[in-house]
Structure formats: C-alpha cells, structure tokens
Length: 167
Image (cartoon, rainbow, N blue to C red; front, side, top):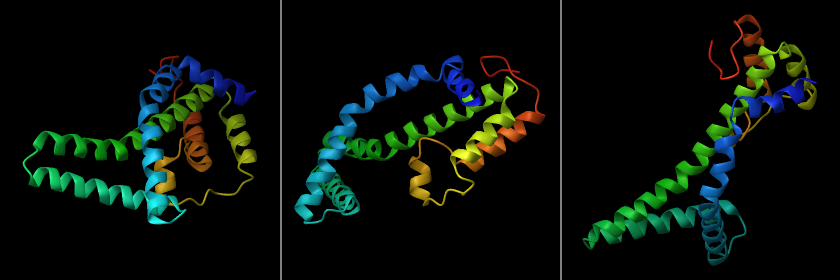
C-alpha cells in the first residue's frame, strides 16, 4: 500500500509534468552524446565507455581551443556551451528525479505511511547499503534507500504538509 501511495505522490506533487518534458527536450542530446561516445570508443580501439568519454572530452577541448585561437568566438562559444551541456544536462536530470522521489516519499509520509514505506524500501534493498562510486551517485535517478529511509523517519516527527508540499 505504501508503494502505491508513493507512486500516487508523483502525480499529486506534480512531479510528473517536468519529467514528461525533460526526456523529450534532452532526447536529441542523449542520442548525439551516445553516438559521439561510441564513435570515439571505436576510433580509440576501445570498447570501454570511459575511454570514449575521455576522447570526446579531449576532442571538444581541442576544438574549443582551436576555434578561439583562430578568432572564431561564436563557434568556440557554441562548442563550449555544448561541452557544458554534456556535463550539466545529465546532472540536472538526475537531481530533479531524486528530488521528485523525496517529494513522493514525503507525500506517503504525510498520509501516515512513512514507516511502511521505510520498511518496504529496506526490504527492496535487502538491508544492504548501496556501495556506489561518487559519479554513480551524482547520476542516479533515485536517492539511496538509506537517504530515503532517514528522510521518512524525519518526516514522521515533522508536521504534515498539504498536497503542494507546503506547510
């Protein structure tokens, strides 16, 4: 029951609206990033995504430097913006997703299901803490179960909020 109320919380907190728009707006970028990374991996002779990412980053840095050195400020600016977008779009998408998860958890807590949801998260996680690298945590769409359980237990002591997340 707590999981269903959590999922209902995604709709009640209006978190689904931007989450429907974000994939459409970022789809061209995600496709281009994937193609460039795969192409760089093939050209580098590696099958690792890490090598491809490094090759794309270095290639982009060289391209920005060369265009700026040649006085082509507009092209250099566009390439620099492309590089920043490559970094910040996935980070922003993941941060918005994590925030939406906390809001849906809070919705369930406000409806008296904080302890049940915490227990369900503990069962789903098998009681094992998530041992992820910092890069995986930054790009994760969900907070760790430990973070969510702590927030739920804190929410049981706080006054309930209305459906918009206000006191």
